[in-house]
Image (tube, rainbow, N blue to C red; front, side, top):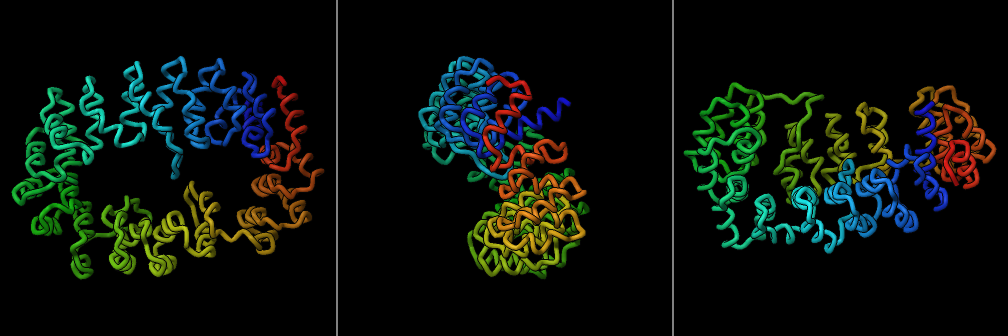
Amino acid sequence: MFDRRRNQLNAIAFNTSAPTDVLLRLLHQEAAGAWGAFMARPLPDEVVDAIVVHPERRLRSTFAESFAVSGEQRGRLVDDPHFRVRQVLANAPNPFRSGAPSLPLPVQRRLLDDPEPIVRRDAAFYGNFDDRLIAGLCDHEDAFMRGASCGSWSLLSGSDRERLLHDPDDDVRQRARIAACGADVFWTGVLLESGLDGSSRRYVIRYGAMTAALAEQVAAGVDASDRQALALNTRAPLDVVRKLADDPEHSVRLAVSVRPEFTEAERAAIDFTVGPSDRLDPVEWVRTCEDADVLRDCARSSHTWLRRSAAFAEHLPADAVELLSHDDDYAVRLLLCERQPTVDGEVVLETYLKCQVITKSLLLSHRNFPKAGLAERFADDPDRGKRALAVLDPDVDADVLARLLADDDSSVSSAAAGHPALPPDLLLRACDEPATETSALRNPSLPANVMHERLDALGVPR
């Protein structure tokens, strides 16, 4: 019963047509189960006005995490009396595979200067603030903040860098030296000799400038993770990396196989495999590549990892998108549909129908997903997943919706209950059926008076 009540509250909270007076009712303690919605939906200023002065810190903190409102609206919490709310505000929202509006610069400055150390420290490290503001922390009295300034290394002057490289604080010095090692082999050597371990050591090996002697030393080490990081370091001498092509560890050989300097024949000569279900991060030099011809070569490669990485690339040319949309590797096609806005809609649909990962629903929001005509194609399909897609058709007939609303499968009937073209009598009926009420209460065609009546029934004050 408790879960059903919460589901109903959340459905109303997420209804895009919910008027301001409905949203304001949801700020009552009796509707606290719906407060999570205020992290993920736009809100009118009148509702924001009420949230920023709300007595419940939990609601204010939830709003501080919002990724769906403007930075100006969220930034109003910079004056919150409780430091925990300001701490949440200082941390950038992290919605899955999307961004969030930045806080205004004056708000960023105030958070970086907050009287509570935990607030300003979180702002410096996790706030996704303007790089110029972070660089300006290099002379801060708090060593933690000086260390954060190393994240904006490219904006620091030579004298600022020197001070940080020789800072009295051990952690600041290490952060500065890690930032410097990408362009200065001296600091790579210092760091590797200093006893670094774990992710910091791998980072230095992966991104640090390398002499042949340093690279040979890493290549001769017993740690396969070190050797793998070396193989992926495009600054490492190629002659040393080539010797790792016969490494006993598959992960090392695989890393060698994606070196940008290698030909297709050289890659094929290395003993490695990439299986259909292998989860691999995109090869960085491919993902960030802006050269269309290089990306075309990757798209044509026999190396599955390179083709998957090309699917990620922001600058992938149209002919390479077309080529990869017919790739034999399903992961290539899935990544292409997730990352490329120009991929053909029928490819997106086919990929969706075959998809078995939990993020498959994201494909439905692809701009080329062919929603028009889905009712005619799938409304009577024996596959419940396809019948549910029929509801996405913006021109689906009311009689088809009625039939889908009565479908024996709850996923189909629930989808139909959320369609804005559902006849009013059926929509009201769907609000009272356990299998369809959540979708019906989210239906943007739901009258405001029905929302109020449901909140009355749930004990939420007017």
